[in-house]
Amino acid sequence: MSKEFYVTADQSGRRIDRLLRGMWPWVPLGAVMKAIRTGEVRLDARKVRPDTRVEEGQFLQVPWEDAMPDQRTADRDVRIPVRNSLETIYRDEYLWIINKPAGLLTQPDTKGGDSLITRVLTELAWTRSDFRPSTVQRLDRNTSGAVIVALTGPSLRHLSELIRERRIRKIYLAVVQGRTEESGEIDLPVLKDPPSNTVRIDPDGQKALTRYRSISYGNGWSGVEAELVTGRSHQARVHFAAVGHPIIGDIKYGGDVKKAKRPLLHAYSLVFPDDEGLPENIKNREFTAPLPKDMEEYFNEM
Figure 1 (cartoon, rainbow, N blue to C red):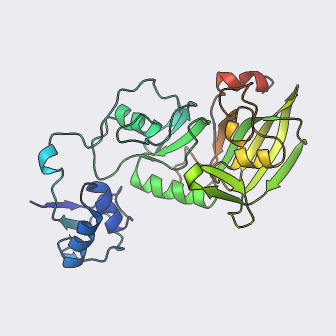
Figure 2: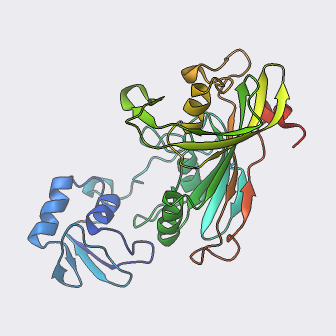
Figure 3: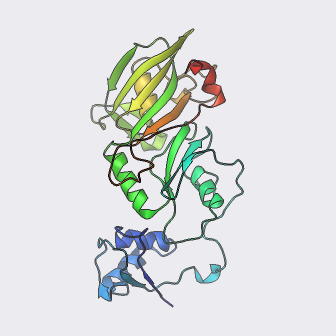
């Protein structure tokens, strides 16, 4: 059997090969490409190329059913009970900003595994296959703080574009070793080593820029506010370590693990631009994530 449907607003703008892979993940990539090539996939009754971008209202015909033949009544994703309720910073029909706790993955590392996005889908009782809510930025498992979840296709595309263009400011709070300068910039390229999941300073790496200012001091530590201008993987962690101020608790980059059980790094604030593509209630607004208990004492005066 086959399926015929009209392209929705959430699907509009996506490449047809990626749309089909998302809706029918059990169909091998080779089979998807063959169906497109041979004309089994038709858009408004015409053959298409894999990189064709669909538009809302177009009529799409594909040679697959909604579910695998032997799993028509099964949920494609194994849903786990929500262990803790999600802490909402802000939510509307466009996006959901969540204060992610340390220790929780942003995306599951196994099928149906616990993660922020798994809990989002469970809380929303999400069953649609044409679109799934998705985060537009990621935090490491042990980093806490504000994460944006796009709730529609158009919001996912626009927010992702704003992130790529560095128009959404991302402010972090961190506790680092030693006494830092009152303010400064760390402009050092970083290169990721996927096998070890570590990042190092390397002249052949990607440009990375961190701006910071110190807002509190203690015995052998500094509380800093850092803006990750470029937002590379592990950027704050490797940058502060490179200038002699590793984040306390960050064993991977030389931080003191006697004072904390995890890197004391928190995604504190998201500042949205005055952008015409954003809803009025989000434009030019700042959303902050309350500090976790293990960092409160370092920033009492805030």
